[in-house]
Image (cartoon, rainbow, N blue to C red; front, side, top):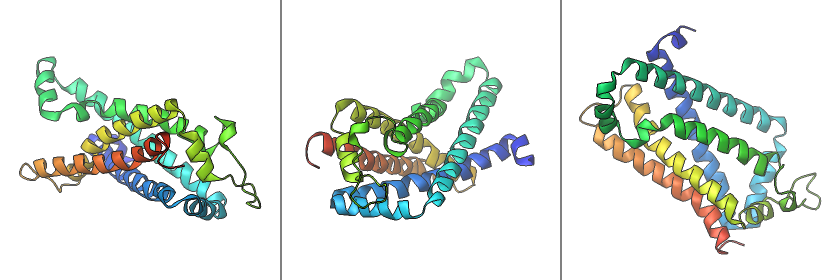
Amino acid sequence: MQLTQSSVGRKIIMAVTGAMLFAFVCVHLLGNSSLFFGSAAINAYAQKLHSLGPVVWIFRLVMLGLFAVHIIFGVQLTLENKAATPDKNVQVKRLKTGFAAETMVISGLALAIFVVYHLLHFTVRVTNPEIYVPIEGGKGMVDVFIMVTHGFQQLLPVMIYSIAMLLLFLHVSHGFQSLFQTIGLSNDRTLPVMGNLSKLVGAVLLVGYVSIPLLILFGLIR
């Protein structure tokens, strides 16, 4: 509880939850990349997750809880920083921090909305019922390859996912750097290097995630 009472403690919580969410995003991308190896590969990956039963949903709920904590403390810290910053220094602060840093709360909240849509789209299977085709003998499992390829054959979902991944790029390009700064592994000398590394990491995630819906939309994965 003492961690939540100070800005330093909240920054540490932000760093820890951010690192865990970042790890999940990377692992999730690796799993999704099995789509490039065909329907058998992505369905085998989905079958493995399905076999874990309630463990998967417990893990998902934990990740959602971490996401909620990350957003709540992020908003609190942003409000505190704005309250402590004189108006005359706002423009100077923006020039020093950059666009990605200034829009962290916006990108984070927008990503939270996207996560809800993503769950409704592919996990809870509320939207687009026509894309959910059961696998014969799959014990209630749907054909994930068909679900994903059919789900991205329309422009609107592809646009939503692409915009969300651009927001993820912005968020990671500052958050990854901020993580190392919070835990004391970054200083004035290494800060530019960490900034470039953060942008590179964000770009890899952007290309990795966006390539899937775009390749499907243009018929290169079918």
